[in-house]
Image (cartoon, rainbow, N blue to C red; front, side):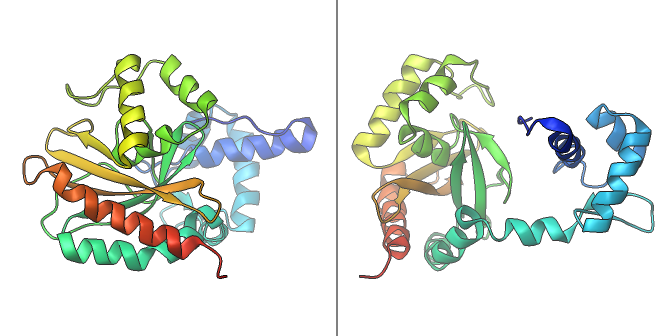
Amino acid sequence: MRRGGPTGPTGAVIGRAFQLLEAFSAQRRALTLSEIARRADMPLSTVHRLMHELCAWGAVERGEDGMFRIGLRLWELGALAPRGQGLREQALPFLEDLSQITKENVQLAVREGTEVVFVERIAGSGAVPVLTRVGGRFASTATGVGLVLLAHAPAEVQEDVLAKPIERYTGKTVTDPARLRRMLADVRATGFAISDRQVTLDALSVAAPVQDGQGQVVAAVSLVVHHGSTSPLTLAPLVRTSARAISRALRPPL
């Protein structure tokens, strides 16, 4: 998703640098200079100059094959984000417990704008394949964690999401705004969300909210299992217990 950047001469340079970094994706992790210029829609000479500066800083790296890749310096900075690494470190013991108990996929996500960002995922042995990845973004309307985070998002965020066309992933994806409103109300009432074959036809997700010390929902944890392998109502208490344990870990000591 393309975001607005700062204005002015310095802001314009920073904005172009962000455009170059956004040329990379999970599907295109290594790019040539020409590919970056084409994907960023910028002159090759400008891309050459900016990529040289990004390389010098460590934001990107150039391999012996001449291809550019995201550099470790960005990973180091990203690890400082409190909603990413800090949250992950607090939650990881409980996520691992849930994974050990169920042998299924366990995920932790936060909301950024109208999307969700996955900050941790533990793959269970023999678990159903999923489309999500750590650091990846996803629509908030289809996944279990997305439904939880959207249900507890400010009203203006919910209205923004529901006013736009809703992406369909499978024939089971809920795209009707009125039905989604009812689902979000159910999430708030029950304390958990169910996403049944909305992302892939072989997967079912059950998610619950994680709260900070002020009672604000700051993340969501989920189990993703094979559809039909078990009842979501059986999974809900496990997920809610893990979410409450993470919530307690996020509270400052008395």
